[in-house]
Length: 224
Image 1 (tube, one colour):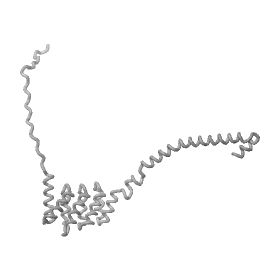
Image 2 (cartoon, rainbow, N blue to C red; image 1 turned 120 degrees about the vertical axis):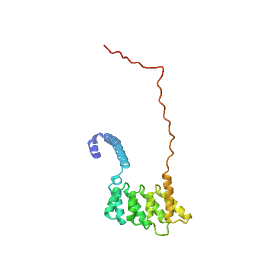
Image 3 (cartoon, helix red, strand yellow; image 1 turned 180 degrees about the vertical axis):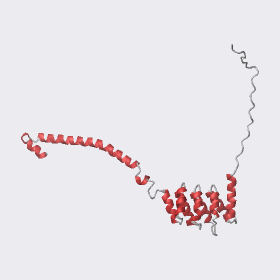
């Protein structure tokens, strides 16, 4: 472009050629500014949406590491639960991941088999609290773990508090595990079965007598 300009305007000097080159540079700069104004907002919007919107890998509940039913079945099978029992327990659970975690925790930290703890973990409102209760009482017992711990922890409305009661009593008093659990569950039952105070009876409101100064009369003459 430069050589063409010089050859075309050779007879008129280099001033005209420099003017044309300068005008072309100004046009290129204006075009660059217009392009930048159009592309920068689009890039900004794209970056914002790219940051705010979660990827499919994060929000997809069917992936292997995020499907709770799949995790539940895999964990129960790994601790020796039969396939049919594992399928029924996971399908019926509101929180299948917690149910399998409850069974696994009890088996790892106590001598209670997974097949014994599965029904209780499946029935518990808070499976994690049930596991904490069973493990807390079971690991503090020097003798063989009593399977009745599962039943006691399942009966308690506050299993963690119940376990603290049992462990605390046995730490200071020579109680057997069953005796301590019976005392703590009895106290829990008394608290949960408190009858609320009855409200005082409200006396019935007597009927209001009709006013003596007003006696309605009705027309009895037949119409002819």
